[in-house]
Length: 161
Image 1 (tube, rainbow, N blue to C red):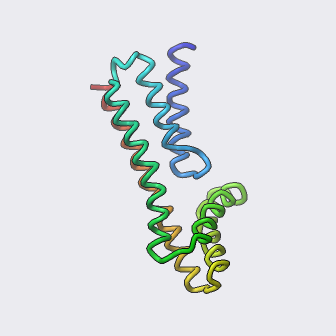
Image 2 (tube, rainbow, N blue to C red; image 1 turned 90 degrees about the vertical axis):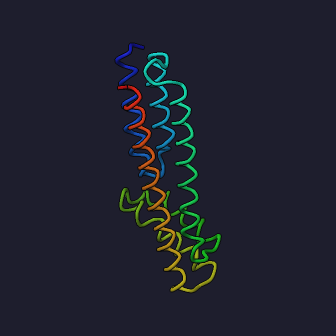
């Protein structure tokens, strides 16, 4: 495979990865990392060192952890049941398939509310859980996107310097 095609693959992986940082069905941050690793590999780590790739790997792990922790903390802060957390996950996936971007935004809320209603039957509590879960997902997504962009910036900086 020619160098130009490899760089095209790098760009494709990074762009799909950045989209995946927002869309839950695409493993965004790992795709960004894979693209950046490929970019470093293309010239045998002459422009972007193995150390930089290692730091990018650590940032990938941090981004994945932050995403999971933010969602759990959002739900846990208001005492969400296990059913509400499971409902939020199911709602996220279902929302992607049934409602596109709007579904991704509404699905976790609806799923968390439905799960909490099944667990406790209290609509006011279920609404609070839905909002808190949605906020956790939102902050987790923003953190993933910010870390992904920081990874790209670090790669570009290392490549150009």
